[in-house]
Length: 385
Ligand code: PMP
Image (cartoon, rainbow, N blue to C red):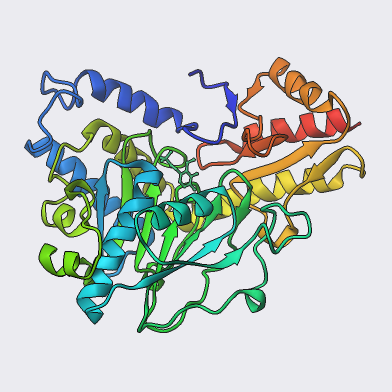
């Protein structure tokens, strides 16, 4: 891509120009070795260094406490829907000798899919929150007030509570960490807002993210896990409890024991994550990135809110608006196409909403510059006028 591209796609998405340039060089030849980074063994010293250094960057950025471990695997976000179910049931069985249930907070397409996947795999899924049913519009356009949520299970019967921190399709983001009962583990999908703000990792059993939106290219997922959850019963004990065994490539204890290298990890893809996390650290860490992300999102919403009624329809309730994916429709027959065509003529692409929602979606990931946000804001104003 060129440096002047104004691209707002929802993922895979833009990456910092310096990262792409360095990655391209390293794909051809890595550190003067005569080989490119896609050509070396995942167990060679330079590859292991990529794993260790990326891990270290993420630990630093998120201030990951000693109680937690960071690892990587192929799988994408969707693979983690399954992996989390297997591994959390196993960890709960180790603690209690029982098969646990799972509570899902469903506030959009991705948490819905995660709940469906857990159910497919034989988990006793309890939908504690259904953002669609709780909304008068019948759409995922809000995080319902916690007072209206169904009760969570207890530490005695519930293996985990699951939620999606930022719903990429619907543009709904949690402005807080859901409060769960003492002793119940919290699992979060942060695929589309990972490393865009500070997070108190100690509150989570598991955080996972496919990297291809904010911090890398498709092919790797990052998992942060409480070390205590890496204890599991034997396969025989799990089977006796009617708990499905995780495929070995999804078995968290096996992956951690092998420093994320039980099987072939896409080292080049992980290297891109190394480069973006290094850049984040060099730029001052997540405190700085969070301020930048918030400022860009505030500019977008302020611009959209300043347009007189009747032009756009902002789909998400104010308290639940995503800083990462800003979704709205354009009112009037043919007007959406006019908006997109006009944007394209000015060099702005990646603005179409997800096929299930329609309308416009502006993705404001870490690599989208303030200049690009200003540019799209000026188009929004021009279009409205
Ligand atoms: N969770 C979220 C929040 C996502 O945005 C996505 C992808 N758009 C996924 C999960 C699924 O990721 P993948 O396509 O890597 O399986």
